[in-house]
Length: 104
Image (cartoon, rainbow, N blue to C red):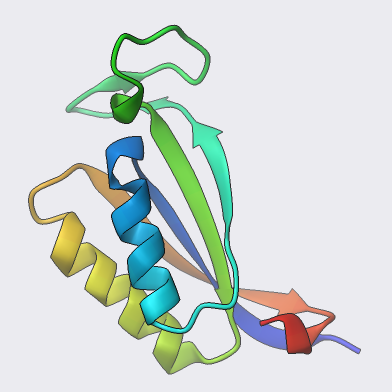
């Protein structure tokens, strides 16, 4: 049986990783996945695969799934307000279907 849930996608510079994870854990997220990312914007070019002198400037993508829509929206809003008023980053929220609701 499938269940509706909400996926929060966060793309940010790696320097924010510890602070973002702390916020997610404090908000009650049961887990997350982190991926190396790359891309281009009006501010920066971030190749996905390259040598960098400063690892903290690499991009990462964090995916979080929560069952409760209100909690997902609160987390997304909090991340946007606390981190992305001054730092580059993207937060998106999507409806997804999960098959093991006890994990989320």
